[in-house]
Length: 83
Image 1 (cartoon, rainbow, N blue to C red):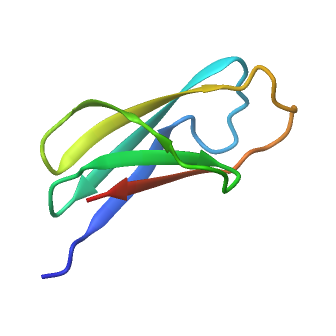
Image 2: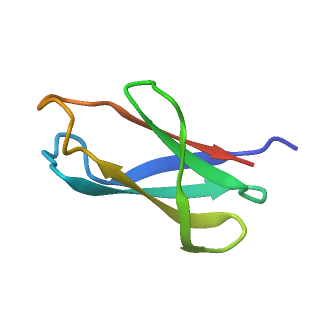
């Protein structure tokens, strides 16, 4: 049986301007137990998110991202779910 995984960054939405401490919110759904969710910025190192709520296969996670010392430009945020 194939494992299906959906990972979606729900906040901030694409194109949103942010500053200071920003809470990234991720919704993860899988056909099997979710172990963790990670995020990265511009393809850099993966950062572990904190579990917020959910069931074994449908969960909400968050990561606090400090943007205060970053250049004022667009960043690409990536997310992955590990099962």
